[in-house]
Length: 180
Image (spheres, rainbow, N blue to C red):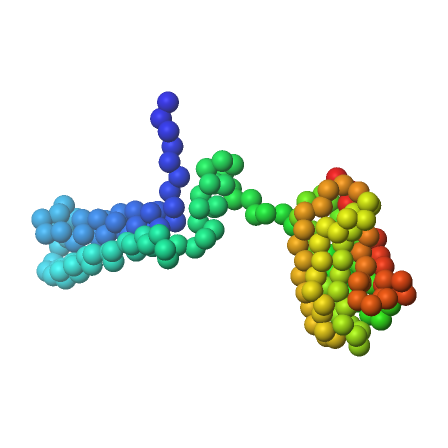
């Protein structure tokens, strides 16, 4: 069985250009049957010389290749198309004595907490599992500042809080549920 190869747009365009050049050259060639059948004096302009195609770009040196080149090639070889790493963004707003979680229910996997401090005091974000173990923590964020915390979470419930001074005791707590 013959294996069929897929043409890229550049190859298809080059093939079309070559076919057009051959057709033009063949029609205007001296001694061609079409020219002999024509009555009267017709002078054919010489066909323009075909310009060579520019050289193909050279591959990048190993140090200049983007870091994702190996990932993309490996993913393409395995599945046919690259699969980006999946992560779920969860916005968290911090104000005096309140944490607002904009997505309180997420899927298992990488979770990216985007903390924004809308308050007047510095705040942080601490993520604890149901046993109270700290799974992740941001540094203290100044008023108007932002911080990002990416952690891998399994199924279950997690407690979010601000550990600055007595903020958690005064109400800066929230929950996050991770489901399949």
